[in-house]
Amino acid sequence: MFSDAIVPTMARELDEIRMDLDSVADDASPDVAGEIRSIRKGLTNIPEDKEARRTQFRETEDRISEIEHQADRSVAERLHTLQEDIHVLAEDVGY
Image (tube, rainbow, N blue to C red; front, side, top):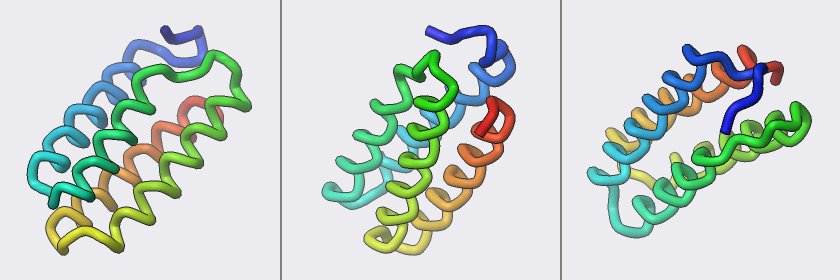
């Protein structure tokens, strides 16, 4: 699933992000929850190719940003934190 570019620590961080997305989805309205679960599913298979990985992380950040505007305040705050976590992870893997 992961190339040498994604070390075990980063894989664990990605697992934590996915679990957090599940938790946020559980607390979100049905339409927002569906979008969050779609994002989470997209983070299941991280491409080996560095450029494809960059694109995927960028698109994920953008999608979360869009969903923040549809979510209630507490869900939006949690999504924003996850967006920041994804950005940090993306930088670590060569964003």
